[in-house]
Image (cartoon, rainbow, N blue to C red; front, side, top):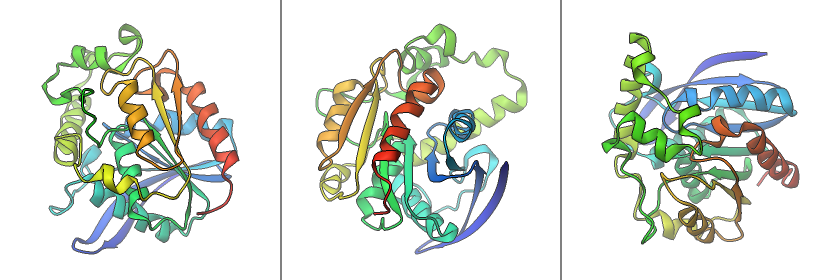
Length: 265
């Protein structure tokens, strides 16, 4: 069963913020945070809810897919506060937070906030958000769609997107999502985040595609090293978007972590 609701959450400094959330399945709660757009995670959310006893929540970051973004909501840290409030609103406990790309950055910001009594663990999947000397993040916003596919996938021919084959409404949605992404993550990093990661006490798994050329494997290792006690795993034959390219491998890795960390906090 799948249902979609819009929740109005009160956030300090922003007032009421509406966030649209789709819920799938039954079982252990999983908050799944997208990167470039909700469509990058929704099919995987369906697969996870079907394959495992999981209740999967997929919010749309305000500003994506035509939703409204409050003027003051401009960064990953603000989205992290929003999703901490969402867990309170939904009254969830024992939650595993899974985020990909900028969604992984938001998950890291949630962990760094330290207000995670409802969270059992965090899974950062090819996350961005920090600077690693010698391992720069690809300049996503300067790349053509073909170039984005080359740095995003192990098999760009199979999984790359050709905008010329999309209908006008899909192109408009992509353009809107790109604009929202520019607001939240134009630099793809926050200079203060590495220092704040050192205070994380919640179990954390960092997963990385071996063929990721948005942010390479050594970048991922540095991310894991910045978080006390974090585990690091490489997913073979996949790039920046394992949920699209190797969904079953990602399900297995995430669910092993979920089962290993059943208690809230």
